[in-house]
Length: 161
Picture (cartoon, rainbow, N blue to C red):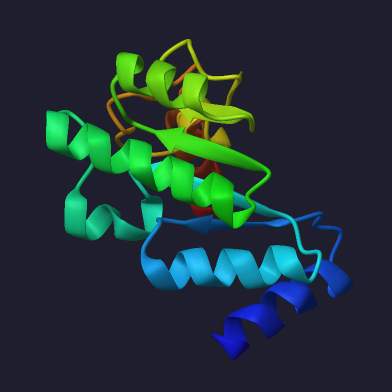
């Protein structure tokens, strides 16, 4: 815990970051958020699909069952009580995002969570089509992966000739 607190403090002091984002809502995360906010470090929460857990959970939508939805609602409320200034809701059903947003006094930021969040975000690499395959909720607005591949291939050919 002390390393997490020190690391967050260092990020704020040594970079232009104005806060930190912590994923999940297990008890140790809640405690870390409370401690960070108590010393004045702004924290954004993140529930639903959490990228740091994607290898355990896959890119499956979270909160689909009544039990899982209630768990996410309780996590959101716990994170708000712990002091997060906003909450990312990732890859959860639209109606659940609406319900969570209506229960909180802090802004929600959706990524693959429908239109009822207070704001929206999309990972730049997904938006630009840099990956071979995007998460199911992330539309690519360009195919820069292919453009980069074509340009690199042409450069290699030019060097060889």
